[in-house]
Image (cartoon, rainbow, N blue to C red; front, side):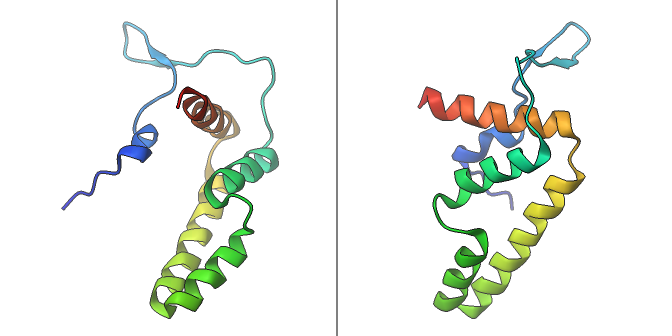
Length: 103
């Protein structure tokens, strides 16, 4: 069973345009962001003003089972950031912010 989350449509959709060969080309921006900056921006986007560890503790307080899942999700979030190539992470963050500005 696949669950579709409309607010996460960006996950499967490239930010750039496809050329004749099907390759995605991304617009060049004036400045790229570092992995540390991307991590901070994504944390702000996902957790608002709450620290990620505080969010896990809040969820744990509501339900230990869900808190365990929240802790695993946060760990996976950090692993994905570390594994993601810098240019893809940069494009992802910029695309997400661009989408937020459109709403």
